[in-house]
Length: 77
Image 1 (cartoon, one colour):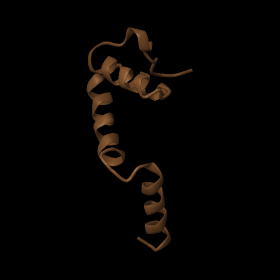
Image 2: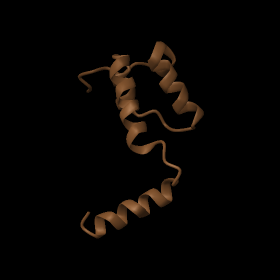
Image 3: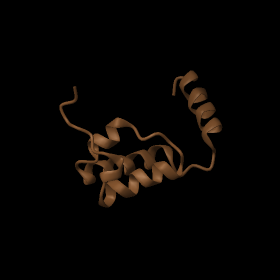
Image 4: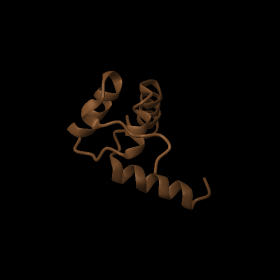
């Protein structure tokens, strides 16, 4: 049983609805954690900004980014 009850994706409003719709457009599953954070849209929006800063905005692509991360980790970086 969750302490924080997740919202229904169909009942989302404002910034939460935009983020959930973006996930649906990308055909990604909506994590339950996102639905729980959706109760506080600023928290969910902040988490999305952090995710896009860390994982988005690269022209390398997922495979090359993972290979680069592996190479750096393997060489003690």
